[in-house]
Length: 216
Image 1: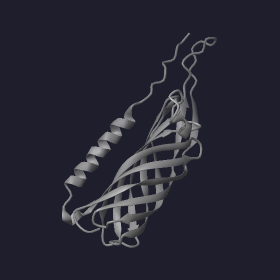
Image 2 (image 1 turned 90 degrees about the horizontal axis):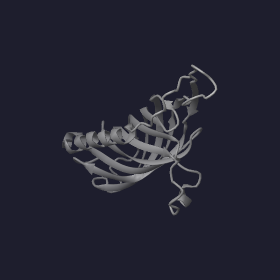
Image 3 (image 1 turned 180 degrees about the vertical axis):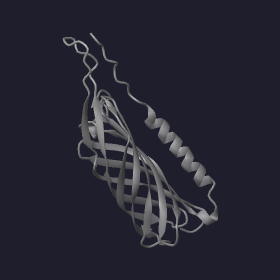
Image 4 (image 1 turned 135 degrees about the vertical axis):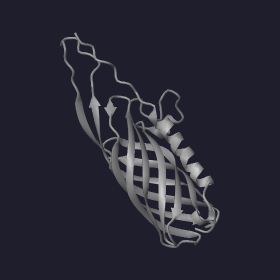
């Protein structure tokens, strides 16, 4: 009887987010007044269609392309939440995140349009493409390409620190392969089932933004 190799849980998420954080910080520290921009640190909530609610956080870096337009770079990390995540915070035996779930790391690049640049309150629109690094505790899943759109509000010092909140929509579909470890009653069989997982959904980011290099 052929015994199938157990599936392995990947650890790319934390390493990739660390690499993305380092790269964005290097870009921010090396920015000149001619490339003035902002650095963001935020928490995030995302309600996906098939994988349920997920929570995480991320970092971002933005540079202006004129008075109103700019380019945004973002790296986030998410894990699927358990059925009652708020209750689980106060229960050591109940995890906040699912024991067997998806981990998603979106790397996003897009354009941003500011409606009131330089003001203490600035609404903005954004959107672009994303490369989704995906991992799973219960199967194998390939990375995917997708997109996002968002509407945000920036409140605070246009030349210093401000608070921002934004609602977003992401679109991406993953395919998870389930491969059983063994079949006691069947010889020489390998069963792989690829199941589509629709991760489209709304979410919200909220955090702090630091300006550097000059006026926004």
